[in-house]
Image (tube, rainbow, N blue to C red; front, side, top):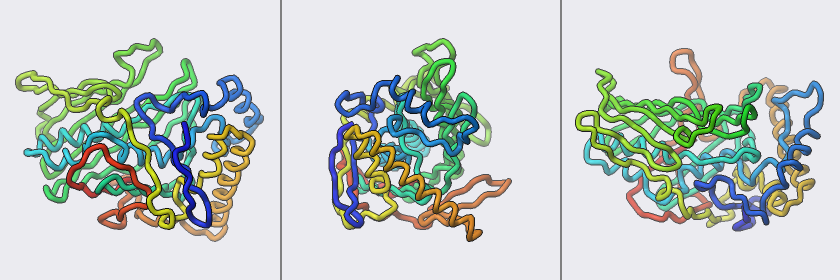
Length: 376
């Protein structure tokens, strides 16, 4: 992955911006790629010691591509060729808008490759980017990497909310899990069930993201299946089928008419890379600054320098956690309010209604009316 721009930022730190993930996943350019898999496995084994705590395990930089997971989530919203959010707002009927919300939700999926992964964001890390009139702000509000035997699961707690103020409609949805499997075949999949609801219209959707079974079959790879129905009666309106990296269709339950609602090739081909528009506006917690030293070293294939830079970031994170524990304090996010209860589960709500324009921008491929959105 080639570096696109180095920009002076906070206290002279340089922000490192790279091309967004595409349908092909992490780029395999030999000029910028990591060492071969065998070298990376040896590097991994050197970091695993008998009796070591996997939760504190440090993934060597040769297994990273130069992005934070927070950046990856942000890119899934602001790096896209079609204005999916405006379509959500422009639908003539509640059902039209609901279908567009489903298509937008599917469009946030990006392929990842086994053997490389983004950085695990540090507590309080932020990412702020604008694309046209769309302003996106993310913040890492918790830090609990989960490990489960032969799998690593990344689960986004809380819920996404998409609010169409003009229509007085709120769409609430969860996210699939990112599952990294080591056995029997190494692979990375987005898996699990996603529910999308709009209480104002009484519409609901259930989606199931599926991956390959033991015997790999293209028909199941990155497939999605589900339905749209009325919450009050569970009456099915549309059946949903397809693959999130190809096309997704809906079939009308009343007349079996099939319509394509999402084309991944149209939405995710030729994506543009963000640039820094206002270097002085970048805050110290910005992902592209926190991980700049690591990213630059990875791009230059200076693996020992990358390891040292990554260790510096992670040691700083541990010191912050230690200080909070010693003071018996609780971490308080800057942009979100967190709550948890047995009834409603884990909730994370934005502190402000609108997100301001960002110092980092990406030029959208299409134009459209703004749908103000804050994304965690």
